[in-house]
Image 1: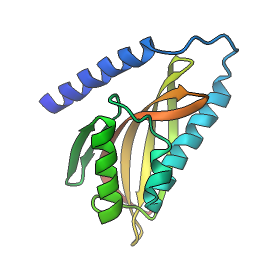
Image 2: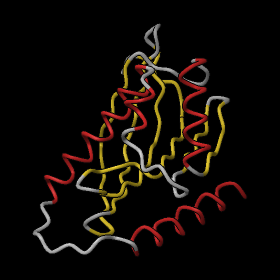
Image 3: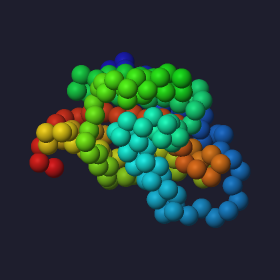
Length: 167
């Protein structure tokens, strides 16, 4: 329970920080276009990660002290705060193929919250298909910032819930 409270407090603090540092924005905001760009970012980052391509994967991330990732479930629990910790952990995961790897990933039921034209939270369901046809379900949250016209990931939270077969 203390871990949940910590994650919630961290998440709330992060949202307040991100929403307060958005760039000034005078152009009309096209929600559907921004959502499509964010989905491309999420799917591209996942494809690079599961393909084992670190250079491609890291291009989707903000690379500073605000970067963080939290993963829990199926015997895998970690929290990485700062780009250095997140990047080093991902390099090791990709190199050693430790942790959870899927042969196919499907993301659906996206729910968007725009905190500013340059900051968004996205909630979605993930289905991670293993080599032998098993499927692990996850609830996921991503925080993104738009920097230099590109949506970049800042925070990743993945909670693996259960193994589902036949989905």
